[in-house]
Length: 85
Image (cartoon, rainbow, N blue to C red; front, side, top):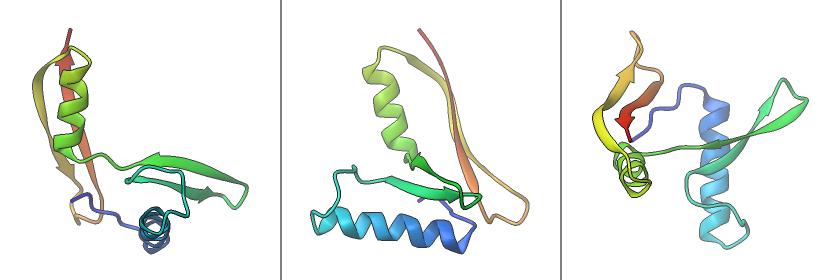
């Protein structure tokens, strides 16, 4: 599970997932838009570690290292992956 620190970002994520289930969105699961400084919408895709590994291997890369980094207060996390061709 990807941790999302900001309430607004979590709300936007859930909104787009519900739209996808109801077939009201052309976005894939894990895709959503977040308002950036109330000027423009920014596209985000939330990968799972397993999904990122599959995509990397499918593209012909060999995974050397991967994991999830969390901050000191664990409000957010980031997936990392090191690969080579």
